[in-house]
Length: 437
Image (cartoon, rainbow, N blue to C red):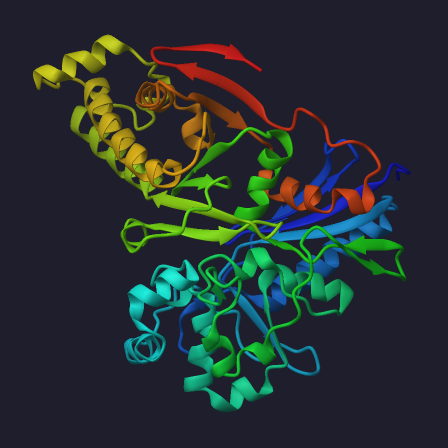
């Protein structure tokens, strides 16, 4: 269909499964998406339908090849904290367990007693105590509860690396998946934590392969990356575009503040405030904090709309007005708009507290906000007002996770320079939007 070199990226989220074709200028020329209903694991808990996901990935790839696109490269991004455990024959030895599955309290207490206690262990691994969201503990649970199953497992691959394995049949581990609240990696020693070896888990983990390199699919003359954890992938377009230190506030259900320029050690107080570290695709530590702001916003807007009998989407038309903000000091709230301002002031104050956890200890002059709140005029102006000594930008990157996976192996397939304008930006200062770049 086309002779222009292309990269194919699978971007696998919990809800949406997507496929993108990018040209050398990182323009999307084709995309496809689907949703796959969950199934149940052996305990009746919801989990990913691994077989259906595998079939969709393989089938979609075959369709692209049949369409005669000039595919030169292939890479993947996917949600984290999810292991695919395969046996010696390449068959799944367990379900793809949901990271929200409850972790047994007895095993939790046993594990932390054996490995230094919650506080010390969390500091060593930069992993808050999150149960199955600490994906390494999923393997610990299987070992303790299903010893015959753990013996059958040949390789435990995080989901992005399993998808790569579908094409390469070469098992690899990736540092972005290992280094994100998995409880596997000792950040202080820059190696696997001692428990991984002592419990016999290390032998189930494949060799680590560089996230910015690729292997050859000789039959198809395609090079293939090994995949990345989605949060790390989403940061790559910003790292490729800006050299000055910045913090990225990625907003959605969770608002996650990411500072790739902060290597200060985590404190237990920071861990207790939902702050952690993970590793980017170069193996560099990134300090991150999170706030459940999008969820809180959704619930509060509904309550305000009900109270004042307003349209549920009333807030979308609100433009920032400093006088309304000042009026709230009187304590009188007489409209949905005023109630919304009052809520947003509190929300942004909590956002500032969260973001300050990663800003502390680094010289950052730029704050980028992407996702839903980047389009919220009240949020953006209040945030700019809270950081008068910094530049606060509303930023837009189309499909940042998939784009990051493509950019990660740029030097392996693309002879052109990375485009200078991957990120669209609007600069905000208190009270008004001032310029576009």
